[in-house]
Length: 273
Image (cartoon, rainbow, N blue to C red; front, side, top):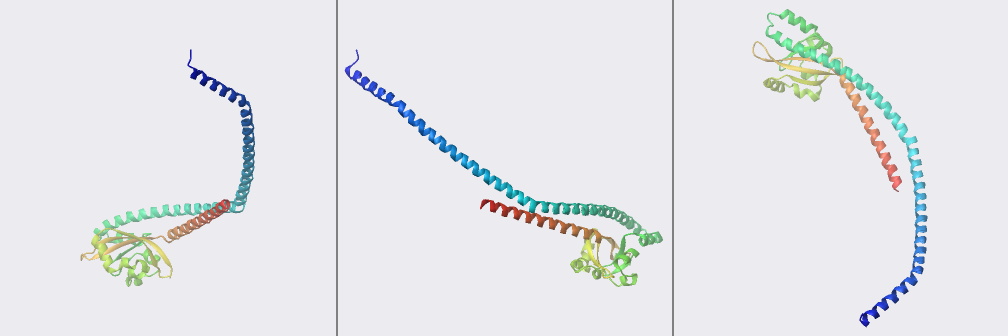
């Protein structure tokens, strides 16, 4: 037997459940209509957005195609031609460098040989003189102030005869940029260090031409223990000019790349706007 209060509560709950169940069908019908209407609206908006995106994508592709046809293709052709020219110049420079390296190795070997020969100058004077006279490199002996000896190749490259060179020094020939290196006080500092000195130097020749030489200077001392310098050099004007042309070509490539980058930035800005 249940208390009267529990029976009354159960009856109320039962009545409420019946009311809810009687209205459930109407509630579910309304919710289905709301859900269906929402789904149709969502589908309509999605389809509209999809069509807009298709139109925008087509416009982008057309713009990219126009930019490619009128700007990128000509630039690519120019860059390709420029790269081909650079490659050709680089190959030529490599050939020149290989020749220069072989000549430089030959000079270095000749210098070592000459240093040993100088120690025995009294016994091998004729042999030493012929070697200097016929060498393909310019070779000279220089005091702190002037030339003491120049072989024929030196006179040929510098464009002065022996008498004229005998009254001159390196300071009279080099470009002002390098004159400080060959002042007597600086030559004395090189002698005090006692190590070979190497420098590419710009020279004004007697013919009025500007030439470049790769100069190597070694320290000597004559019989009176006075400092003298044994110098040898090769003319490297062609190598320097090739390097300058290659640097100018790379500058053109960098400018073209910068212009192309600015163009792409402008296009991107127009797309954003």
